[in-house]
Amino acid sequence: MLAVTVGTPLLQAEQACSLFKALADPIRLQVVEVLSSGERCVCDLGADLGLAQSRLSFHLKVLKQAGLLQDRQQGRWTYYSLRPLALQQLSGWILQRIEHAAKPAAPCG
Image (cartoon, rainbow, N blue to C red; front, side, top):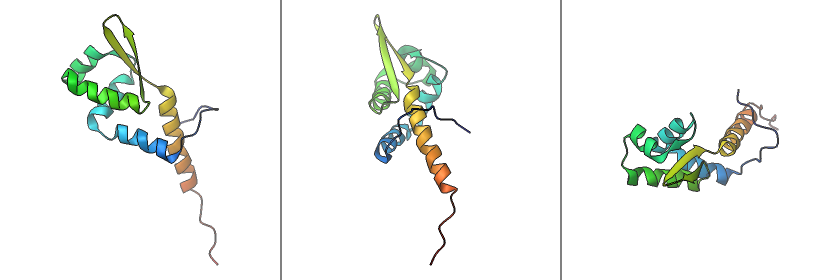
């Protein structure tokens, strides 16, 4: 099972919703999958995913605004990587739901 780093801030439901919305697109999931192996130049991402620059830029913007990606400039290139804390927070939110779902109901009456 996944472990959440001690001291990782907990997400509120609306924050989790924002992250889920950003991940609710197959292309954005592919971006996350590619970046799970490490930082990539935007030119490599476009080639790996077979996407036009404008389409890729839109999806990168959505993921970045949700807080799932970070970027850095080097010369004329932009490099993207995942923000591990955001993924840890989301996995922690999910794990809390799993733990709570296993609790039996209080007796009626």
